[in-house]
Image (cartoon, rainbow, N blue to C red; front, side, top):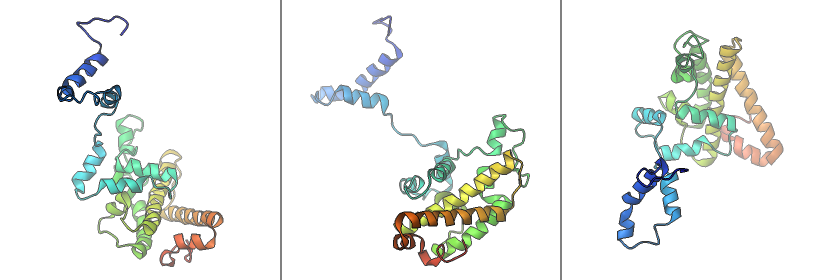
Amino acid sequence: NSYPNSCQPSFFYKHLLSLIRDNIAILSNHNISTFTVKFLYKLLFNPPATTSPGVERWSNIYPTISWKTLWNFVFDDFTENRKNELQWFILHRAVKTAQKLAEWKYLISPNCSVCGRPETITHLFLNCNRSKSVWAWAMNILSSLTKVSSDLRIIAFFLPFEKPKRRNILAWFVKSVNYAVWKFRNISHFDHIHKEAIDIINFIKSDIRQRIYMDLDRYGLDKCFDTWGLNSIFCTSDG
């Protein structure tokens, strides 16, 4: 506001004056103590939260999903940040698929590097034949731990809702599967090295073993088995 002009206030002051006009009722009701600089600051810099287009699209498909509960699954303390971040991108439908990258002229082809079909978010994580094989293996484990939904998208993208101890393991496992599919997709797409579904499954098994060994070293046998010993799936199987 280097050149003040009472007839033409700057954009900032126009906005500030409009906020004062919109909230003049506070003054008229003699609640002058409420009308503070802090009050105006919150109005200026804390606009109402808006729903992302990705969340709106998922909500149209699954109107019964409890987003308030779901967000607690996304960035949990039990899962590694890289997996949590990918899950956040999935829920916002912000994953950089080949289809999106082609629209932005970053890639020439919008197709999957594995099967040649258009690579959308559901194709990448669920519908590609390689991803289907990975999830067929993963569902055998999930079916031993929880009631599996008939719609795989509920499991892969929204995670199963369970009691806290079981929920941590289920969420970690689902995120780990998604992360492995994403990692090997990038290897295929950008390094031009094709891997089979069994390679992804072996990567997930190795990830599970490393995590269990790490928790065993950090917490000891009793606490580690209490966390990972659900139905003796992870601690007694070969991976």
